[in-house]
Image 1 (tube, rainbow, N blue to C red):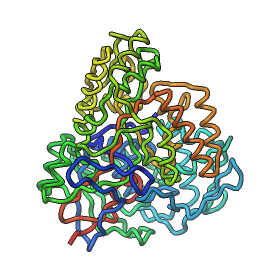
Image 2: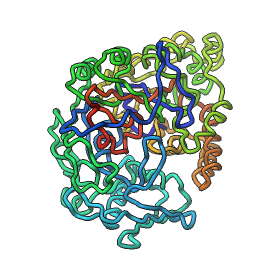
Image 3: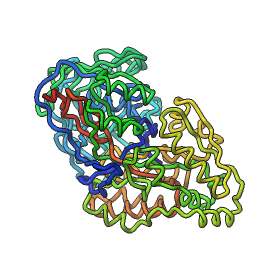
Image 4: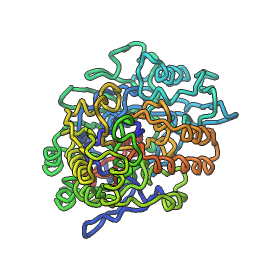
Length: 540
């Protein structure tokens, strides 16, 4: 259910949709509003080096374990997928020059010739087979394993051809070949490194425009340009990229203001106004597929009653939450998946969302629902963390809203590591009813988001189950026609809004800060897979 990533709501719950992806363009509350565009101005020249700020150190650089912003932000420049998501949220060829669907249960990928790994060896079908099978191997423990649930075979069908054979139609599988599930690594390197692959201090050997040079745990990660990179349109403009890790949002903001860091994605929302007026660079807002949500973790407790979930949703003052948690940059969310997640056919987005009810702030009606459900005084435990100030802001707002309508909302503070564990370890969810999460798609297809509400899915954190929903999902995932699939996904969206296994809060655009000396970065969430660092260069 979300989202599938671990939603480390991170230092910027400020994330969502764009005009170019069919979303309603947010208007902002500042005097000058804000514009949402997929790209910053192009670079004017090369750079010898670049320092980039991450809000946390990656816990891995193993593509099969990369399930959050920090690792994917680094790996986007190092490893590549069979397909590629572009900055304006389209899917194009990547390491595969074409893909075919000769029948509903077969996907055939023709590989790009002459692609080399960072060690100079040439990519073949054997590398693709090994990389995909590793995702499927239970011993790998990949959170992406469920993406391959309908795959019965991954076969080399030519020196540069790989065929996936399925047990039933699965259009979403092909689209996820543009995200972590489709990442290709050297089979020989995987065999050589074994359990040391991608760990702190370890190595990876992929095909991207940058190679991993050094990982000094607790300090930095350094990438160097790959001279043999195949895509001449993305030849790196910067020779060396160094990532630093700054968890404290105020300290991270200071790295931008002092020039210690040249830039960073997911700008602390509490610092948006300061950075926008600093004269030290520019905050850009880009396309996003994410929304801030409350994910229900326990359907056997107080929130098991739909009336209580509806009441809590009605009690939320979303406009004030946006001001406090997102720097005023955002709009109330009408559905768990943001408008920007609907980039499959963006021209249909507005019509779909017009059919959904607007979020209502009605404390009196919410109180009545709680009384009707017999839930007055009953406990609801919401987990919070110092991971990012936005988490505390939203948690306090939810607690106040819940108590105002008669619920005993209790906050349970946990360490950042424990907060992250909630999204990957079912045992970490025990005793919890709600978690604040940042739900987003890795691909332009909103069906990716709504798959995580299926019965038994890895991302269905609260084990919500609805037979009607499952049946509707099966119809959607078998629909090869984008229009039919989009309409069927809207059916899923309407069920989710009606049943509220996830309570939507708000959407906001993606953000990136670029200091005065650099430009060229994509501005949106596609940076998780698009080789964004290759396009950054000198601003003057």
